[in-house]
Image 1 (tube, rainbow, N blue to C red):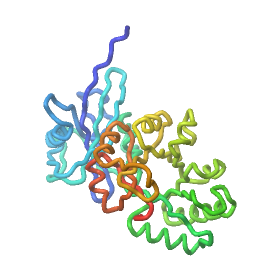
Image 2 (tube, helix red, strand yellow):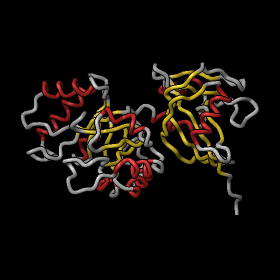
Image 3 (cartoon, one colour):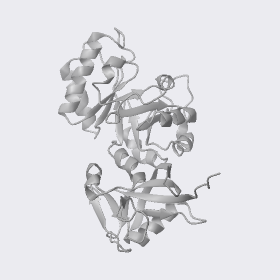
Image 4 (cartoon, rainbow, N blue to C red):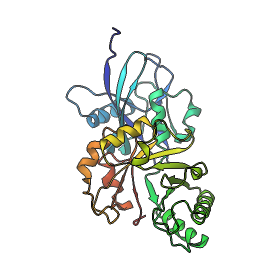
Length: 321
């Protein structure tokens, strides 16, 4: 039998400055994968929590003291000789100015420009992509049958004034049906206006598959996701999956989703007969998601800080967005 690979538990810090840049460090010559770039962090020692290890490692590596960090995504990555369980944290506040105490080079970079630094450690690639996901995600309310381009413009302006740049087109109650030509025209108009404003629009799988290609991505209902055997979109499109249970989340991993929605957190009018998930259960599931998780259900943008304390990437909603 082949020898099993050792599993290392590692805490990793995604340091974000007010310019939207992240800090990446280059591995020194005396370490494996020397010269490759990665997020700072290190091994979790016996008796340490992941956050305690993160605080210690960033102090030892960069001479910074973390004052605000929230759990983000955890996943296992398998290298040729080892497996690592990586616990990523979003680090948004610290004291001190970063310096390479171990002689390593480091750089601040926009996530989309990270590859320009050089080779990125393979386990760093998924988080780099995930950082392009906004923290707020708006699901469209039910539009009126006589909704005009001006009405759509007003909706977008109000939402984008709150910092929202990611939208989902979802119209389950459209009077003429979810596949009507009038609704397709409304979707096309909203997509055009989103692109004019630098926003992205995903489409819910309740609408015809023929519409999906035009959108910036797809939000799969859990009931639609389980009908699929593989990812239904190319990697240059976003794929989100709506989930309610851990089983849904595990299926999202199989379909190589980019993120999931998990909820509902609070009691909502849209789900009057379903019990709310609550933050404790949300966190328990999110910890095992291995993907960015948006909390949804009775939330507003004001809930973002609380959501991040429970392993959320961000929050999604309808009425409050």
